[in-house]
Image 1: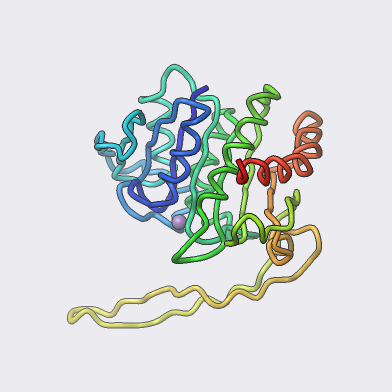
Image 2 (image 1 turned 60 degrees about the vertical axis):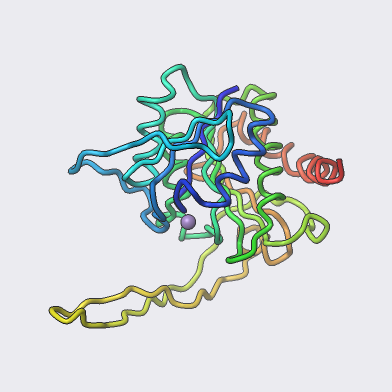
Length: 261
Ligand code: MN
């Protein structure tokens, strides 16, 4: 099995390597990711500049790693069209530092990377932990491995894009897995002006989220200390629907077993 790992926090982010370290237990992993933090660039693809990419020294010996001077989506396109020409079974983007919930998925670079995999017809997963600073990446990485195994074992080749968010909790504090839909929040961006000595500038600062707590949404699941798995872009077809229906109950049991072993 061949897995492409990318992200939007940059190729040296801790979450990316926690993920790669776990996925290498079940697959050949290749890392292709932006050279710096590209959080919030969404689905952006660079079409008006050339892209530079270098092979970097990988922190994990058997994993080839490339750094791209571009967006998360750029990184995945270069990986699929240039580096991994023999084919990719799965694209996993993350583990992002911070949640990617509700309407925010449209500006998420983590989702933007996974979306390219989806466009190319490869099962794809975006993975985020809803916290900042000290994060439980280990639980998220194990979960990614288990979902990857399910997708491969079931021979799932239909277009599927899963947006997975975990509460930032140790495994024994988690209450389960929910298949969800995107939640809604109010937007209250603030503009903070400043001056650089020559010209005025503006910072867009994201306002405090006020979420609508609707049962069945991703934000609601996290509020219940549950892992949220949201299928993105359209209604899943029959095969994917069955896959998702069976995924939730067994996934959590397997996660608990895996963490204890
Ligand atoms: Mn990010």
